[in-house]
Length: 203
Image 1 (cartoon, rainbow, N blue to C red):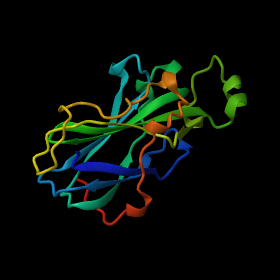
Image 2: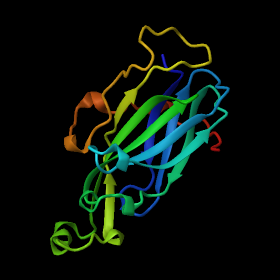
Image 3: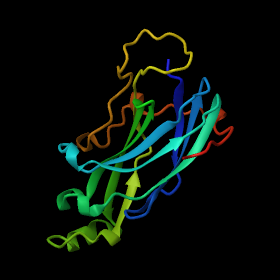
């Protein structure tokens, strides 16, 4: 059993311009007080076939973490468009939020992000053959995340688990190739009756 379980991730500015910062609130449950901080990272995947192009656009440390329902707000800059191949700026990309403890990743939450021109298809057609006008782009993040959980070695007391360390317990983070998959088992479980009993500091 995981000591920390994500209950909800709420994007506070979606849709938005492509260049706007990401702003979201993470709510999670902690079963035992943690002596070390949790580390959260936001990763932008523009080309699933080339991991070298992944951008770790921000990270933060959250702690100390008391038992119970906790939440924090995370603001991250947008990805650097200069590091994205021209042909991959428009269309579908992946946005991945990871949570780690003691340098062990215990959860990975993947979203699809669709990027298009503010004027829609008409503007896209008028821009064919021209350099992408980043300042004219808008993004929309799907509301159906796909969650992968990993069993790790926590340094606090926890119920015994029969799974092996490092084993994923749910669907893998998506690639852009499967955009639009509505498989119900891949949606995040949200406990709406248990959200936000307190906030904790971000380092």
